[in-house]
Length: 301
Image (cartoon, rainbow, N blue to C red):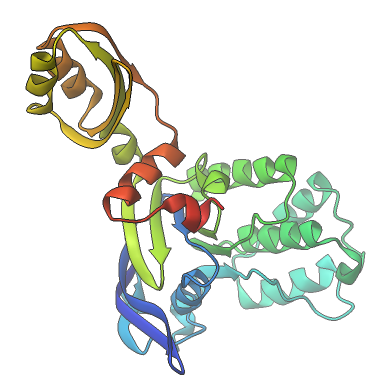
């Protein structure tokens, strides 16, 4: 487990990370969401042991990370601007990374280079931005570490490549318990891969929830009541997050399971009633609106 406990980090008079506490369990894909400047990169660099927190602590499997080479060997950090040797090739980077990480799988790396059509002897400085990101991710996956920290690593990948990398993540998680931590400014980029999401805003944690729990515990329902009395009766039974009217049609976003929602509506008289599916984007909008934020302006604009 990665445990981030009351971490603070400032640069001069700018507080980049403000009292953040997050726990990242093993065997899940953790998504770290937030706009540019929200503190994602700074937080990941503290998790990787590159930066030292001003306050608080970061531990990996109960070991402090900063100035701890043994703990750092259990994680690989893929920066938003991956570093490669000047005039280096994938073979050169493989030799260097394998020297730093004893568990590096050379055979697997060679296979991935063929799959993604990356020539092992081609100079990396001739690669496109997307190809460089692919290579950095593949080096990280093949390092054999328990945790893989990815900072905007899917930015610049085309949809086919993105799905290919996600499939590799799923396989590595199943076979050896890899735990990817993916930072992004785009919710849509993560919604089909993450199990748990933390939302950063202005250096602090705005939301930290399991996605499945969120999906199961928030519903959207449409109905037409037979009477105003039935409408008032229902409102006493449900926890409304948001309510919209269009003539006699009522649309509610509410907290609770589908079963609880159907039971509550079943106890009043309606002309029409149905529970509608909610996208992850709609769930996030509902959750953050309650806290007084418009997520569309934070990570969807």
